[in-house]
Length: 320
Image (cartoon, rainbow, N blue to C red; front, top):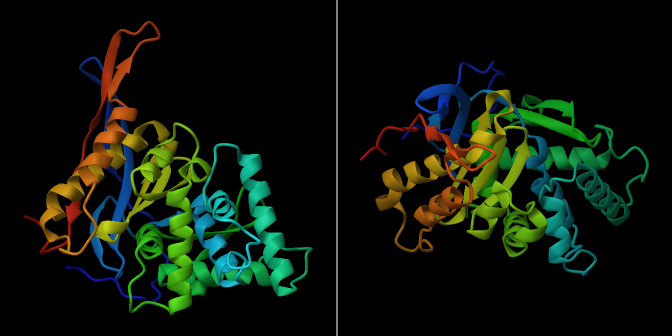
């Protein structure tokens, strides 16, 4: 199995993606949805991929759970200043962008108050709040802070750019933090944030969204922005990041279901005996049920289909 260790790597330009989903109108190919995917285990091994797993990718809204981690470390849950519902709302990403920004601002002000940081300028990269967030993102990603790109997100907060597989690793560690990674307090904080998201999928994901379906079926998921989704399978200790090119939101559910099926088929016999019962097949089936592949006209007549176009490439030793 190919291993990825926690060292800094040079920034690389994303290479050409793979065709993940094909949209057909009748028998004709109308659109080919190209993208990239990375599957990483909680120990940092790149398990499977499609396209370029090392391409630099904006973290976007997928940073939100890691902005919630300092709240847990600061004891705000223990002191009942923030409820489980509050944590789920901060960690998730709703369709209402304005509401997302308000939640981020509330979390930022709570942390500033807790640590006596200045309550002004908290969106600046040099503010202690943003330094703490950047440190936690780097810790979960196993990457040096200087190796990440820094941009501005839609709410005006600093955002981060890092290799796609590192984003998948962040979610694997969030949902199933390894015993030998980080300290006990950080692992407990990760469990608390992931647990809040799973306990309150109604707050962590928008109604009817792919993310909500995943959360309701045991996957820790966040919509990372246009054409991107990141999720973790706690029982399998895997994080998955999918980045479609050209903002192909329509194709995301079909790509996600195919990847989950491919993982179940290839790794099904390699899950530890003491792992929670796998629900991979059920998760993939539920995604397909909520997002059927058939394309229909406005009048309800068959128009075509969305079809999966690519299987994952698995690291040596994982193919059956």
